[in-house]
Image 1 (cartoon, one colour):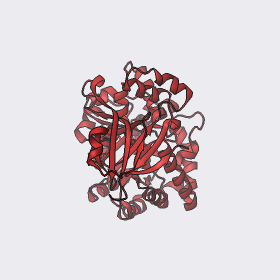
Image 2 (image 1 turned 30 degrees about the vertical axis):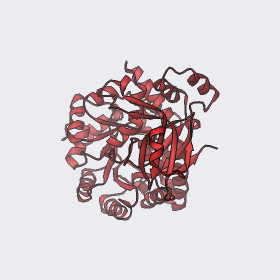
Image 3 (image 1 turned 90 degrees about the vertical axis):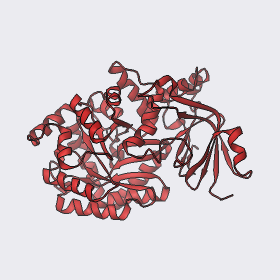
Image 4 (image 1 turned 90 degrees about the horizontal axis):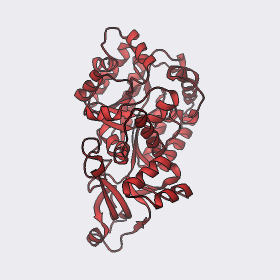
Amino acid sequence: MTQDTLGLRGPALTFRHDPFRGEADTALVHWPDALVVMRGGIIAGFGDHAAERPRHPGDMPVHHHPDGLILPGFVDAHVHYPQLEMAGSFGETLLDWLRRYTFPTEARFADAAHAERVAKAFLSALLRAGTTTACVYCTVHEHSADALFAEAERLGMRIAAGKVLMDRHAPDELLDGPDHGIPATQRLIDRWHGRGRLLYAITPRFAPSCTDDALCAAGRLWCDNPGTLVQTHLCETEAEIAWVRELFPATDSYLGVYRAAGLAGPGAVMGHAVHVTEGDLDALRETGCGVAHCPSSNLFLGSGLFPAHEMAAAGVRIGLGSDVGAGTGLSTLRTLGDAYKVARLRGARLHPAQALWLATRGGAEAMRLEDRIGTLAPGMEADLVVLDPAATPELALRTEGARDPADRLFALMALGDERAVRATYVAGRLAYRRG
């Protein structure tokens, strides 16, 4: 037996179908006693323990979690690692938030040692939250991306990230025109993209922070580097949309600004997309862009209520984003609790199967990684999280009488947080264990 083979045993949940496009009540498959076999960073076997165990060597080590819940590792499709230290700052709308908190915080990343320290803290916090893949914004500084990629490589995580591009409407020390930002981005792509499990995401901060020249240069860069991703922001607040209309009067919509620059297509992940029109929904589907739903951030800044069910009905790929630092934490479970509340405020119900989809397979689809992550199945990368339904006295009391696995999952997303993450496995190795 190879030394990197490991079994993981316990109750597990997988998907029968997409719960947004099929019956949510029948979307989940519950395995009361499953075995996941991980070898060489890949899931080599998955199924009922009694049937699967004889297919593998008798001396294979097995981590047994009989009272846990095994799930695919969580995917955070929109997060700003430099803003970890400013999460929970008081009382501003989006544009004031950028000026008062974000830009001063990101200016500190001119210090490479500071970037390295925060990158390590950020990725460690992701693992404690059960997150194994993330699409991450760095700062304008080239070494901020180097710091994150280096630590992610050490940990074996699947991370997509990029240095921010912006050449206007920010402090001078954070402006980065095409003559500097594009060559720096290309250097980062050459250094990191496709190295191990790392991916590069070309990152214009958002349309108002970039001139036409900067956006078009980023679009050409994307065309010249197949397989890279794009990440940016779209229709987060009404004030932002009005500003885009002023800055780009010749373009018919916010998304149209990105389309004109060559920045909308499969592999582009648009953060927020709260205030979208029917035309925007059609354009998102037609271009193949993914969208990151960031409920905690939208509630905290008062940005608006994301139309998850309408977005899914239009055929758009949707994942979940913590959006730290406007989001108040990296816990996917807490973010899902907020997503449920946003849906209720819109008069809808986010079924626990739909919530789990957003946090796993949906995020993988938004990032065009569904062939590698987001599902428990042989051949997929072995990124998993084990949840503890009795992590706190309140959770234990609530889940003891759960009607079914979906009800237990709903209790975890309504009442749980990082404390409910018992273990996180990355590429088939134990990366975090509570306590």
